[in-house]
Length: 286
Image (cartoon, rainbow, N blue to C red):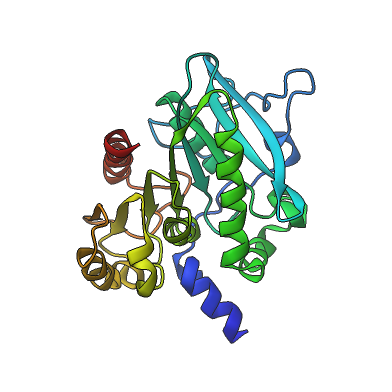
């Protein structure tokens, strides 16, 4: 039990930092694909409050479930991108410790609308996928899988994006939220081909690994998120001792998970600001 708790503290949320509302979880209906087109079933995002929300089936976007190999097995992800155009930038998305939810799929479509090919992995693909698990089992399954498996899956996803003709292979970024923010920081120390990352309230990587970071890193922090934001000064000092391009920003008056608009911790003003800051960061470095 202690080992599992330590692992979750490394990359995710403590129990009291999980979004406090009953966030919509995936169901076979919300995650299924149109058998003719491969596109996900059209529909609004359950519980979404953000003005940035992009419903499934929005004109000009293609969304589908994709599958590719990773460490001897296949993993799945939700891919969103524009219908047509030249090869452009892409972003990998790491979900919270609730798995690949409709909210994270919405985030992928938001990036697609902003001009990115966005791939949100289901890090529980080996367990049958987020939608196949009981809601209460998701965070534990992610913890047991371990950080290294998750980073390895994102390495495979990076290679998958590089192989797509609508992606510029030299312009790939990564973002993640809560647990996913922690995985994003870990990936920044290992996936040197990333151009930029934006980690939303994610635990810092091993400070000894900070010097290995190659992408330009942006950290989103919440003023009231004492555990995560409290550890930020040490990370800032470690980054300052390197040549890593970085910015760590604390958003005022908000708590952990403030970007998740299906959570009662959502704050529209600061979530929108963090989103725009992330797009600006990616626009500068990707």
